[in-house]
Image 1 (tube, rainbow, N blue to C red):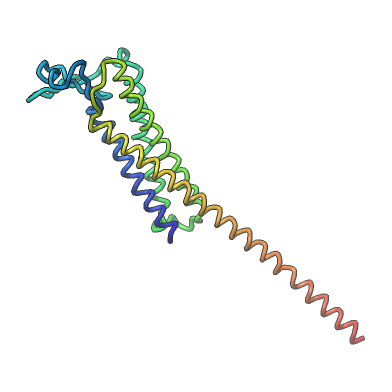
Image 2: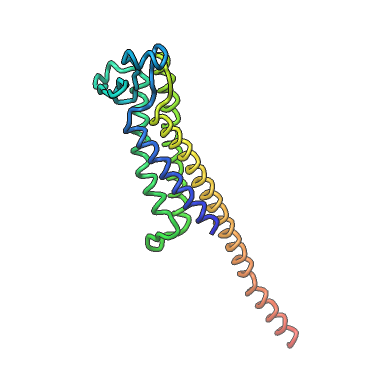
Length: 219
């Protein structure tokens, strides 16, 4: 029962983390950049926002974005962030699917519990890879933006990516650890059952020996 609760908790946390990674990937409010003071940049319309897909100009009553379509001319940190965030968003789908099909309430024929545990571990490892992709992207992107143009503050998308990364890391650890412990306990029980069966198998020869002894005594 406790293992099932841990598995369900890990699944829900992982789903929330994956959702945070998707939201961060699809939006552009990652960082706010300004070369001067915040009020000066607003008056001069030089307060800019940047994400993996677009650069935006932010001022009073104006929010205009320009898509970053020149792929070969983009800095390395932007291209890497795009690749990692897309990879994390895609890997989350099979991970969630495998974890969902490994839940105790779902049965695929006469599938043994050990197969479900292995599937849960694999799903947890994929979630950890999603968290790793989000971690590298959400750390490298603001650092690269600061070196390139000067960083003023973090945006909503970056905070969402950090929350999604933390949730994915926590959910992946819960799923991997609880399933590993469950697999170990099942293996220990199977070994004990085999040991007792071997011990039980030694009883018939003892009965035969006692019978032969009784016959020899009667003679």
